[in-house]
Image (spheres, rainbow, N blue to C red):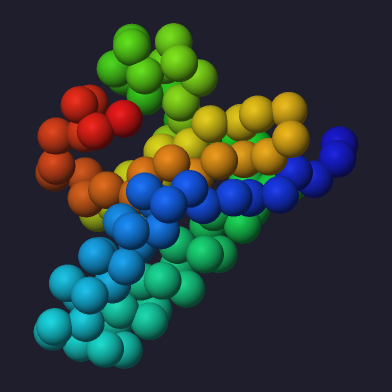
Length: 100
């Protein structure tokens, strides 16, 4: 199967910067580790774009969203014919339905 590029939309980029800044307050090393974990997990979507779970929210599932669990965070993405679009990376305790 052809690999698809993984593209972070601006909203996901902002989520990653916010998350790293929050973690960095307690530990700069932990923030770097978290970003490495996210990058490693999401880069696998290039080869296995359908590997994420379908969300339980029917509206999001109907829109084609999938998600990857990253510890306490959830990465929401959509597979298009040209790429894997990372749309949001949110803390799992956050209400996310209205954000997507």
